[in-house]
Amino acid sequence: MDDTVKLPVGIDDFEKLRTEEFYYIDKTGLIKELLHNWSEVNLFTRPRRFGKSLNMSMLKCFFEYGCDGRLFDGLYIAGETELCEKYMGKFPVISVSLKDASAGDYRTARQMLCAIIGNEAMRFQFLLESERLTEKEKGRYKQLIAVGGVGEAAYVMADDVLTESLLTLCQYLYKHYGQKAVLLIDEYDVPLDKARHFGYYDEMAKLIRNLYSRTLKSNGCLQFAVMTGCLKIAKESIFTGLNNLRVFSVMNVQFDEYFGFSDRDVKKMLDYYGYGDRFDLAKEWYDGYRFGNADVYCPWDVINYCADLRADPKASPRAFWTNTSGNDIIRSFIQTAKPGTRRELELLVDGESVTKRVNQELTYRDLYSNTDNLWSVLFMTGYLTMRGEADGDICQLAIPNREIRKIFIDQILEWFQEEARRDAPRLDAFCNAFPKGDAGAIEESFNAYLAKTISIHDTSVRNRKKENFYHGILLGLLGHREDWYIRSNAESGEGFSDILIEIEEEGIGIVIEVKYSNSRRRAEKAEEKSMRDARLEKGCREALAQIEDLGYDAKLRMDGMDTVIKYGIACDRKRCRVMVSV
View: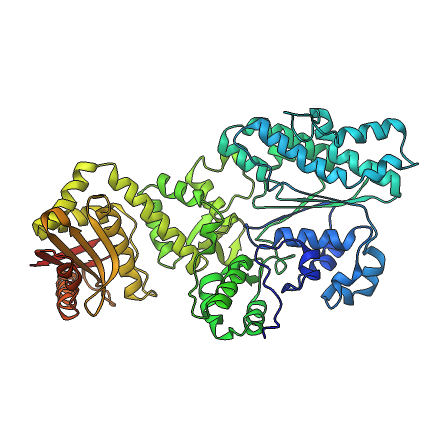
């Protein structure tokens, strides 16, 4: 019987994780370092899915009155007895997460913000019975928890009540307990991100600016505040006049190991569940992030991969980030990229780095305003990471791992297909050349398409992986013909063919096998062209021979196709060669 604890997939509640037997990688050292190095307002910026919310829940459980010390038994912080005696369970804690404060319009987003703060205020209804609060103060508190009627929002705070809400809670908790409050604001920048996306940025920025300014600036009832988010927003945007803010970004050494998993963490987890032999694969897919001096993995990915392995020990790694975001930033980057930037993107996808200035003082209004800003956003949101040491704000940026590389490639393919479909007559001509057996027209058109896309020629990647990229491009182009029956990697004969097409009305079947042909050594330009042409021809012949030897046409003939046309297509960077056999 399996007696291992559960994997915490999507669990960001520290108390639940510790009481209901979930696996936990100890990050309680964050508490000690925070107590030794805190500023009045502390902002941690990290990409999504790196454990920010779980750490905030942990801080709440540690500092809040009524703390159950057993939650920390066996963890690092429990060994710091003096700190525990002095700080554990000694503060009123206000904890809000703004990750759900998002909507398509300002009114709804504001209602969500009221609901988030109103629900938190509901936890402190004992203030209504407090002998230390005046009746006027209790009346003000009631405004925070006033519930709307039928057809109204859940909480009906006026603007002045909303902007003063967190400050009001700090003041009244301090007055009730005689102890300053700890304030935790998770995902502080989500409302601004959504507002930018849906077009009500100015209204939301004003509201958030007033809320944070009133709460965090000169608040004598605040012990300290901790905030988390993806980006550091420029002070001129929402932190106007806030001089007590200290930011710990992915470039800071302090706290670098407390967001994300280390090699040791991942190896220990995989060993615990009996999948230690998958460590190298997990490292290749999910490691590669650099926070300060720490090399870290994305926790979300490692936990999900481990969960997949428990369900199927033969499970392969996959891109879990794809399921958590639309990856709009990459799409915007590709769509707005000029030829020089596309060349840099090719270098990144090929495993190299590019030198860029990282601006950590952006406003959400400016994020997508130019390509330089997009480089910074890709870095701060985890799609790129730093290699080596930064020279001020000049960094060597690289794609961290195979997962993110796959996301880039998938977005490149989607962009390319959208671009190709804009010229339907040209795409029709390309597709129609296949049933005609016109290898020359296919080659000419495919070369033209390749010249406009972003190529992949990473020498560290096996040829089969490179072939998959060109395979994907072809499949996307041919998919334009919705009246054709197209299969990818279909079992036929004694193997799996790259692409099989059936044009039922004409009784024509098409087999396509793609090869990648690349030289390992450099050569003079004239010689290289001659060598490349020879390699491409050889690749085409090998592809056609593979079709014959493995009987890839068998499935088409079995399905009643009278004519079968076979194509061998060899690619090298942005060049291709096409050969046909009937």
